[in-house]
Amino acid sequence: MAIKDIQQEILKLKKENDICILAHCYQSPEILEVADYTGDSFGLAVEAAKVENKTVIMCGVRFMAETVKILSPDKTVILSNADAGCPMAEMMDKDVISEVKKQYPDYTVVAYVNTTSELKTVCDVCVTSSSALKICRKLESDKILFIPDRNLGSWIAEQLPEKEFKLLSGGCPTHAKIGKEAVLAAKAKHPDALFLVHPECVSEVVELADYVGSTTGIMDYARKSDAKEFIIGTENSIVTHLQLECPDKKFYPLSKNLICNNMKATTLVDVLNCCKGCGGEVIELDEETRLGAKRCIDKMIELG
Ligand code: 13P
Ligand code: SF4
Figure (cartoon, protein in one colour):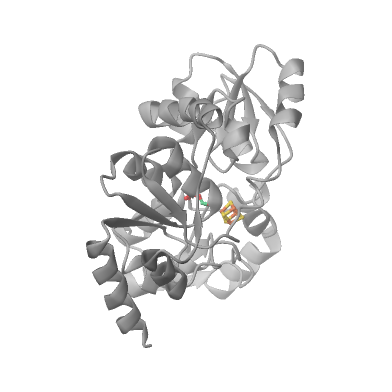
């Protein structure tokens, strides 16, 4: 079957079966084209709270599908590919963080949304890369235990010197593996390009950026900028999407290794199979976990 025929079939089944497709921006162009909503982690969570369809297919990774289920327990929520996890989300568990909390009893626990639902139950509020600064600033507490992404946490901490941050040593293996040498090499190759970076990258990389922001932050910046060339310091799918959207500008990947295999796990055929009811994984959460995690997600949406 050709790509456009599969897409036609998905669009038909979506209508017939009252399905909404949500897709993170790191998905491939052919998936984004059939989605009802595309965006970064925060945008997807906000959209998840508004969806009215009977079934939601999340093209992204597991914690994103869990967020939809947390907000919409009566819907059938399908993770597009059962193997699409997020290594950062699985890095820390509830028991470890419960122990750490005992050392910092007066700290507010801020969890990046890239965490399991179970871990969220022992946290105070979730954030995403696009909402973290705003939410941490708004929090009454001036003592923040930020988990699990050390890089995002230290970038936020730098901008809020009036608050005290405790960071743990988690992070995104895709973004964190890129070092300063890659930036220097890319800048030497493309001296006129602006460097746009995701705060999941290490601080020595972030320090060299012209702009730091979430996935959609980077995309908006590049769309609106008068500059003509950009080095993109986030998952390489964003290079492809921006190049398709802005053909008069040039986009270069910071590194050809900036690829998240989990985000790449979903194929268009996976989405088709989910629409047929024979693919992906239906997300189930016990009510106690769901409600415990919902507290943090609701607070994120309220403050973000
Ligand atoms: P954002 O969607 O918040 O930019 O985060 C990027 C990411 O790594 C998602 O898993
Ligand atoms: Fe997780 Fe990083 Fe992949 Fe995002 S890019 S899903 S944080 S591993």
